[in-house]
Length: 347
Image (cartoon, rainbow, N blue to C red; front, side):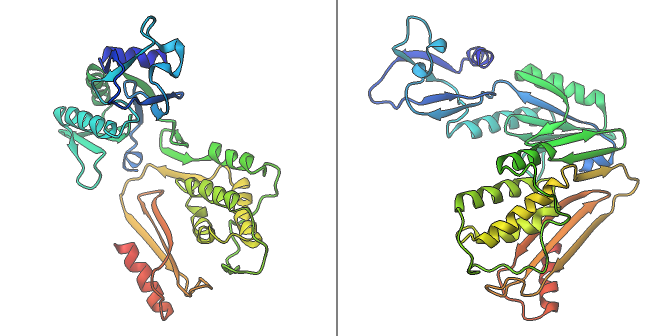
């Protein structure tokens, strides 16, 4: 926190003023702070120190804790001169600033992804993926990446985290010819959260012959726990397409969860127990070939007779896009169901 405060003082983000009756005082709660894979590039991670991780709470900014008050000015408050993390204006202000700086360095914003920037130099390329105050930096030339880091440090207080190894709950293992992304640590947290560390593992996440109903006659269960399980499983599919179908199906019964639905949900967790090391592996390849697969059942939902279709795509190696979703219309034949699935995949 002292380091964050030093950065804020350096950037002259605020100044001490007397409290004003006609102005709202904000409280602060303190908190602790696939293309590159195929090309055999390394991915590096940078963190912007100055984007302080603070959130609005209630009460007085200066009175949050006496340790961080200016001695002799305990009755004063800080008047913000610049945007601070946690305020409504902060994300836009930060994005505009970093966008201007990156474009000033010669980067061009992607037309399809507003937080992706590319800079080409002869036959070399550097890519920037921006996520709030974290930057992921892959590229074909290590010297250009190091130059970029120096350029950024001139403008922002940054921490060079080296090669990316852990990001948003996903573990990244980079080797000479491959990159593996998995969520083993997060999966273990799920088992611990629901006290299933010692449960018996299952070979499949769901029984494909099992048809679930909204009203199956079994007793209702705690919806809070059921929703929590689904929430954890839905985040786990960031690197686990193998559980997407089961997570998609059980999420249809959020407001009518029964013992049968809970049994199916816990089966998915028991499957995770036996597949903790599973993830997606991207390997170096000579030829880039986009491959896609689509599939569909027919009238798989016993409640409304709607079909569920899915697709997955890879580019060279490793799956990078996947989906499993119940359709909005009722297909009147297996051919129509497959056609709808293929159309969704093509789109």
